[in-house]
Amino acid sequence: MAGMDKMVKKGFIRYTKKKYPNEAERIIRKADKLFPKLYAKAPDIGGKENAMAYNLDMMLIAISFFEASDHRIDGSAFGEIAEDIFSKLRFLGKFINVNHKWQMKLLKKMMYKRYIPYSRLVDEKIAKGEWGNTWKIKINPRHTNEGVCFDLVGCPLADYARANGYMNILPFMCATDHILPEIIHAKLIRTHTCALGSDSCDYWYVADKSKTAKKFKGKII
Image (tube, rainbow, N blue to C red):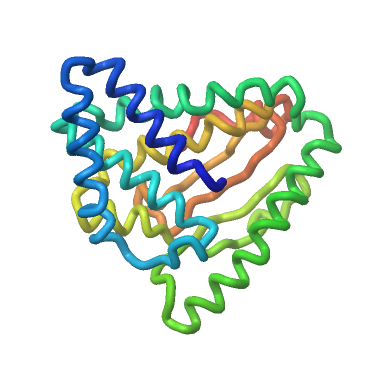
């Protein structure tokens, strides 16, 4: 997901110019000045060596605009901003539909190929006292053959939000996780998150026309 932080910043800039045209330049400049100060408070989770670290950068971008706009660009705006960002990827839905079993199988292979080596690297780093409370991964804790399933254990975003008074907006950021799966005709089934007090966040991607998807009611962030 390299470059996602840049896409997110552009999304916030577009939103700011759209909603606050007379103040946009001031808000954007202030957000740019705030970002390094916010980043300085963040835990060291490995920077570019950590393939998941961009998530922390994205959260800090959101917080910088939240603060720069005097809390007007808040959690209620994050969904609209995320929808705008991902709108440019909607065309993928014409080619990727995980209701086709072979496409879900390919998605599973790609995601596990990424996360299994990452999990091993995290274990090595934590054993050395590095990367703090970065995301640890449990692959397929449900022991299911359906879809793609994993848990992220621990969350530096939640740690940061809790320590700096942003827990009220963190759930809105987590809720945007549902957007990308919908583009490829998947449903994210989630029952708990660190943002709501758990020690982990569960991810189970199933085909959106499956019995499992239709049976699951509600949307946990």
